[in-house]
Image (tube, rainbow, N blue to C red; front, side):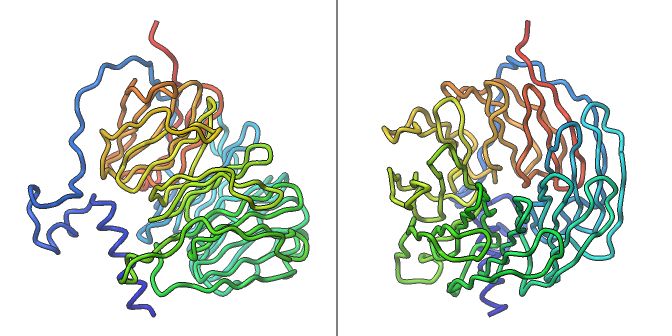
Length: 391
């Protein structure tokens, strides 16, 4: 099984097409590689993208292809690094409020609810920290690596593991309340979806191409929806993981799968409201009446939320290993494997600005609030930008 998982990991790297080692491994020249990253063309800088501050946080994403995700709470940003460093940072200044160095490797986080922070370890641990001090309040065991941020509603902490399980833990004590086991395919993409807690319901996507809704307190299944159906003769062709971040808007849940579909589901029943054939493992976001997605190919697409089709497509960033698109003000931000930050119009997908936070690339979802955008690079730089039109 470990060997097959390693094959899946190589497959993901080859898909991202950003690593010279992979190209050299298959001995393909640039002209022969159908997934060669697109060259960046010059654009007209139509926005002022002002860097306000930058803070180094440990080793960032480390060497495990992690996507440790910062989180905002009011005037504080919480961020973690793979080597175990966790910080609370003042949004306005970038000053560190507190810093903790945990004695374990981190692979999933940061989740947040009121006075609690939640982190997952690479060796099968989940923990709650005090959001005011960083003190560890409890630690519990799970069966595998945690690759997404645990989520909570103040009564239960929900954790998804790479081996296809979903757990519910008591918010106060860390005692396990329930567990759900999915059937894990032979090959999977390295990653999991991030569970979504909406009131007393948990929505989670799995490597089977399915999305399930659970009762948050007892783990009972409320409904199940198939987003993608495995097709093809080889196990690689049959990978249909639901990875990345899902989005809830009212009674609609938006979700995307690899080698499958993007779908809008009714959160009450799981009924499909509409679907489109796509392949993505980055997750979805929404804004301006659109649902945004980065496809496997690197095309950024805006689908109309009402299911009436595509508003616009931007294919110029093909195979550049993009992040999930993040709306910021009236713009859309994506970052790539070389560390470039691209700002597009939410109206038509036109390029409006480009800056380079760092050469080590970006995998984690960016954070946005008003005109502010926060970028956490793979190498551990958390950077705050203020984005406004040029006068």
